[in-house]
Image (cartoon, rainbow, N blue to C red; front, top):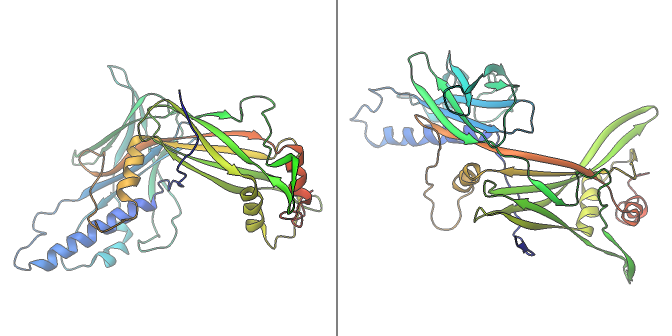
Length: 354
């Protein structure tokens, strides 16, 4: 087991259902272009819709969501106009289920439809149906998604559910995990106290392709007798496990970056902020499997001279993605001198922490 001291840190853009909208729009635009190229051939003579599936299972969450839509072309109607008609994207009736494991007696989970709010954009937002379940998702077990239409067409995809990633340092599973020291105890620079880098150690397994590490400062906003729990997110960075190996990797949180991130986000906030000296940090590690990592690599921003985007999907009889991620969270705290720097230091001392 090796430890790599220099890590390429790159924030991971984790999938949201908005990714589905991009694929639908690409499909509409491409097909509309084909129609414009040759008006002597009726490309719409044989209508066939395309099932679009997006799901990201997470055993740490109490509810799983799967998005199922359709993409299609209509002669004489532009892609932008189609995008405004929400009824075009949804099937009237679907049977959506997840099959856990294999063999002769697998566990079958039926997913139910639910309407969820959707932000305004290119696509209509007056209707947005997703499928969900609150049944348990079992780590290290294959889960097969099956979407069945009334005409018998079945769209399938399979993923193995990830276990939570282990945080080796700090040991968040302990009752009193080690505290984060971001200020030197022994050295004072001409400009003031010396900031320290804190090294997080994350343990990879071959089924984890990529992780993102976030640290949250926790506090209560206090006004009279009212207390509102709040938090500030400090993004530490991401790591790719390109070789899919068992390995320990280091991610570094610079001390000055920690305090400046808090100051940048709370600038102008004069509220009173009470902070627990013994439990003020939430550490979060989000991991994704190789399926999702490959998907984000393919459908991320185009770089360089090559402007042709390859296709990637793990959905049978459709397009999209059915993959897995895991979320590991644990609590820690700032070491005493680092805590005092938050309350009284030159960067965050004016933000009313107490």
